[in-house]
Length: 74
Image 1 (cartoon, rainbow, N blue to C red):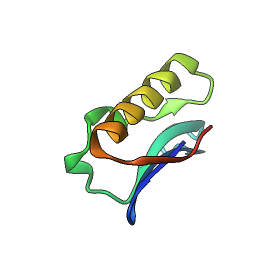
Image 2 (image 1 turned 180 degrees about the horizontal axis):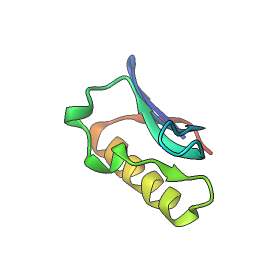
Image 3 (image 1 turned 120 degrees about the vertical axis):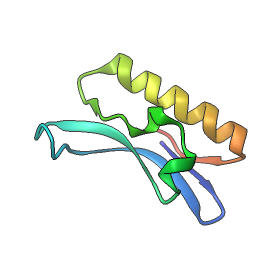
């Protein structure tokens, strides 16, 4: 799920967690983390569908309020 506004972006993507060595979903962005919701700092296990839905919903609501456009949906 990728949102863009000009050169700024925020997306949900997967990676290997440095803490647990498990695959996780997380928010990747080029924005200043201090100005973003604390929910965006979470790492959600790839098997945690409820956690992923919460992360998606938080990103969608934030992007809508900030005028970001959805350019890729997962």
